[in-house]
Image (cartoon, rainbow over all chains, first blue to last red; front, top):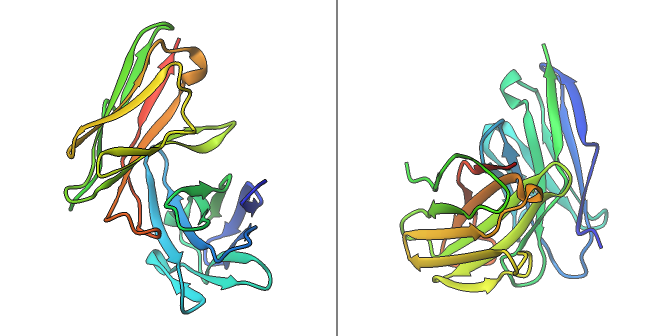
Length: 113
Length: 115
């Protein structure tokens, strides 16, 4: 069973426009949720993570995500896209008390000048 | 600026040859992960070590893959014999003390091509 689903393998936005990358998870236990970014020919870098507490999480590079338990979602947003945001973004989840991370299939973000 | 290092960055080999990939985790981190990334399968966890002990290698084909941590500064992933289907980017990541939500820091990866 898929633990984390990313809607849209490719998303295009204009420079300056809102970025919205969607992630839904399936879990019967409180999840830990992550967003990672991967630039071409590089490893993954953590953008932000939700563990407990405040459901709106702010990360690096102006990104934020909101944990919505009722919707089982953890969508990633940024008010204004920059050209440098073009990359692939991965939503990830840890279920239970083990460090094993399950990654989504990724969303490639294209920023159009 | 502490980073995870991986060698080699690129490897081209012929089917049947042994391949060894190395990873140096961030000093002080006691968890190490090996991932494989392909277009078809995405990111897959191959192995997970905590304090140099393998805790989970269920994602790793046992017949040809092996992972070890000879010491705290070196993790290795070996494929013997290699096959074309092993062509992928292999990432090593290290984390902190083993807390469930510890951030994993990824290395730049080893791009393996098996001809």
